[in-house]
Length: 511
Image (cartoon, rainbow, N blue to C red; front, side, top):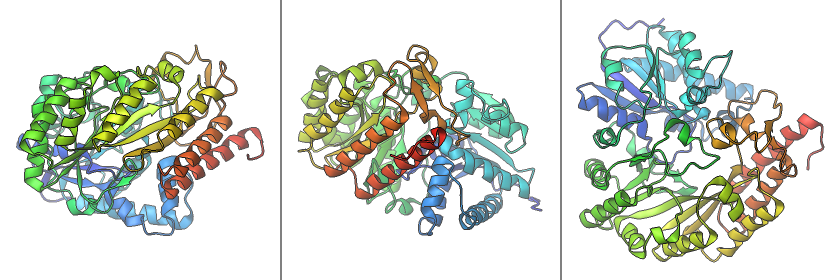
């Protein structure tokens, strides 16, 4: 049994848990390190997501483990042995770091299985090791009032079982120092968002302990591989929209943003410290405040003209709200690629979603981004509750109408069929009006079963129809070169696998 007989070398080690696509260096550990170091604590960071994926990416069972992490599918004996051995060894390595606290950041529910198993192995070796968990992947049940297991939330489950000693619900930036300095245990919830003053006062994320070079050949943002390391920063929290399918409002109900000067200063500081030239915004959207967005672009264009590149989620707006000068300044400042939630080619569907932009607005934005050599990646989902066959055809027409814009200046991501999650207006406000109910999914992994919904107001829009429409959209996007054959195959395989499970519930033949 592990015995820690010396004083700790670190106050905390902050780790980012799998599973997530390796899109950029994760923000949470770097930001928490910056905050804690500024307060006089000694901390370090580790990207477990990167390390784990490097460890299994060349194994013959790599896809098996990825599907296990993402969808909760079963592992073969060989893959299961590898998974458990890796966790045991990593648990010991984390203990050897000799930190008072081991912190795990969970991005989504796909981080739950790995993080829980890692906590188990850490506590198995040293029951006295303090562990703290946080991140939206851990907090979903606290935010929605839903239970994880045995009528408990996920946080209550791991605290009651002793797998973790503390949990931070949502905002951790202003309470993490007090928690670590005073060894506070249990559940901690600020019960409010950070104010704009607090957001602007946050320390610069510290990436010094990251294996920066390791990201250069693995980074994949919006399906476009990068040849350089990308750092993550945050310019805002919350969103200016309350789209019916999005759960951001459940934990960040008010849009708060940093000043453009503050954001630009953070980017420049990281560039000067590490020579990093690529940046990814973690924001729900980067242009929620046009005042701040313009200010950031003006500062970057002036102080680092055509030096850095940035990517982020961007919201399509009524065309009069963004000028041609705005698009030009974005290009001068280094805007490289934008992910845009178009979601549907049907204006009636987007109106019900509360997206608040027309096809004419899409066209104006698309042309201006294209003319300024800014890559745009459109997310499109299938199967919104009101979606009819004509709405779906409108989506296919939208994809085809812009096929003259070639990859990578335009890429279109057929994301998935709609998943209706607790914390979204569809679930919390509209499910009775839309007569939404869920099928018995035979205990799929957490989160996945929310795809298995049906609506009484549009019975043709069942999961079987949604999955077949999704496959049709995937095929069209591949034909136009918007996604690679590999991504097309992976998405089609997932659609077929989900269809098999759907058919098994109703003893229907595959189709």
